[in-house]
Image (cartoon, rainbow over all chains, first blue to last red; front, side, top):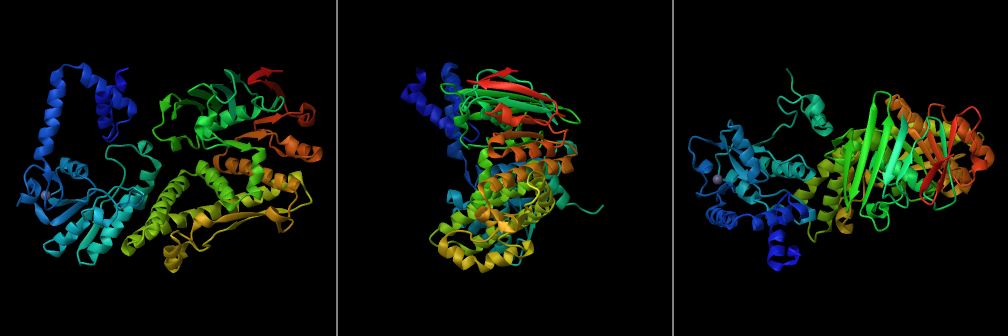
Length: 199
Length: 357
Ligand SMILES: [Zn+2]
């Protein structure tokens, strides 16, 4: 069976290391790459290698970038006094898609997670505090996820940053726009009720 | 609420099986190890996605099979619920009315089964963790918000304990974990107290129906009685937590104690009293589910008759509200005839096959 050929096994294992890819999907992807014209495999491997060699993390905010510092950190029209802290580059990308945020970012590359051996030293927390200490920052917006780990990291950051006399805020969580209440899960709804505002 | 139909295949020792219970009392009899308990277990699994006797799901699949399927048709007051469970090589997929659930916890509360099994005596005899599991499971079914707080609390507790086990735990980080631990822990304490306030009198009454001359009560013994004092308690225990590498205080150390005639049943009650007390807890849940949802759950009694003397068994069946659909198993048909005013149906379970009698 093809699956037991070492080179194929290696390819399947490589796909499995990607997020959201299980055993079956990895096998399906590998078999697809191998049965499609060779041009697909070449384009894919070239694109991966090329992008990976060009993209680095920004020295200031830690976001993925081709230029260093990144285009956001280098953009003088953005408000450098407001820093939005996200867990991963995907978080910054999501906020950028919204198109209204004019501040800058700081990417932690994870959250506090003792079970996975991730403490403050493993995250880009010192870099954030250093940015704040250097001055010019008046607000830090913490936009980590609402998992137990994301919430605790938000709390940890808020203590560290407020000790430097800079305001710390947490993004609100609630009901998606245009979404009916009946389609919102219980926990989100509960949180939205807790964070209600006066009309 | 009633179970109209249960079908399963590949589950435990059961063959391809169809069970069509009536709204009243359903008696499944047969010798030991013929599949009676597995039938109840399949129904319970369809409604909770859990087994009452194992956490290892691969034990549930028939020998030499890699798949089991269960379908339950339940009629609720407001609508029909069709639950389909498909377990294949360790992955379980659940559909409710043909729609796949994204989270297994979304299944809870769609239908309610109260299940009494002989192992329930551990609720009285066993460790505090057994009782906490009982209350957590029952409360989660009735209140999704409790389940959310419980899952968060457990996750924070795991993280905090891991941090405490490190050679030199980072104190600011420990403080950051204390806050959500105290916040979710306070919800657990308050909700458990409210739940006990409702459940305790019902259990007292249920026990009195079966054994009128032995007053029974349940009390909640929270490790930290004042939920608002949790942050302070965590702070006070911090040094011993750091020394021992574990979180010493909080609702994960709660207990619920059952008393018969004023004495802890765990130590002083007879085997028969303990069984009756465990049963009273389950019967109390029936009324509690009815109070909260305006609808009676389905009652499943596994080998309960063997656990009780004839007088207690008869009083038990008389005490169950006539609107409650019951499925009970027995090895001895004569000992389990329900009182004459209730409609009953008989089934024979033999070698994993079910026959209507
Ligand atoms: Zn940057």
